[in-house]
Length: 301
Image (cartoon, rainbow, N blue to C red; front, side, top):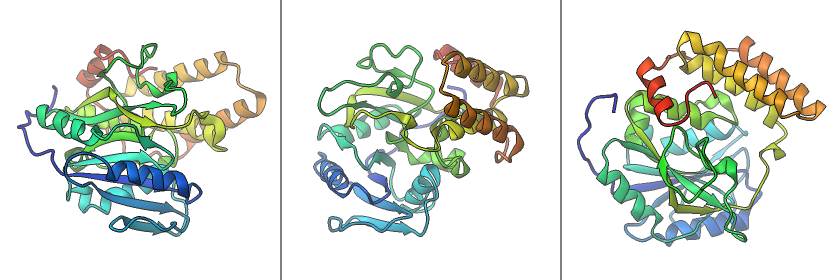
């Protein structure tokens, strides 16, 4: 651990943040039922309508309806603040996709146990599995060595719609980067958390069922992915790596031979990342760079 020593504290109170566009009411209701079915103390839930009215929801669920779509990270930040400044009304917040489903009723209890056991643990990334096949897509395992999704490990990032965060992390490093709108906001928060001395675990036994999808289904995918990778580097990396990280991803993208429209959108986002404001710059310590490298993912890829 690179930060100040932390003493064990309560990890008993759990809340959940669900962001929705209001277009999956049946799936949303099933998710909320799976949260309500969790063992242990009841979980407080807030559902944020991201630019859309909310359907009828179970009694006791907190609701926030935003007048416009502010993007995924800004919408989730609204959900955090619904639990008080930085989510401080609870010890842990679950972030769950509105078309997901908690596969097992002991997930919240496992989270409580993990956070209570390890005061340095700040974030837990769940395993996402297809509800029909049980398979986990390679991109849903947040490490380079992703061949075995059933292997739990320390990691350097996490999955945005299937995770648990100790709210003390938000108190120390702030929330998600709202201007990102979509893509890589989790890595931005993860890098800041790791730089502050927190740990991140991928837990294969904490499962969110979610239909298999392709990330490029989002119209803004290629532009946002490219822009936000540049922003990640400009915001978080020591000066010598600010160019290296985007350059590596530039070459990787070309090697993957995207379609002409996809490449055009990606290049536009890449240029935008260098030309537009990226938010406050807080470069991580070199010892954090080494820590990321030891965890198997140096911040150049």
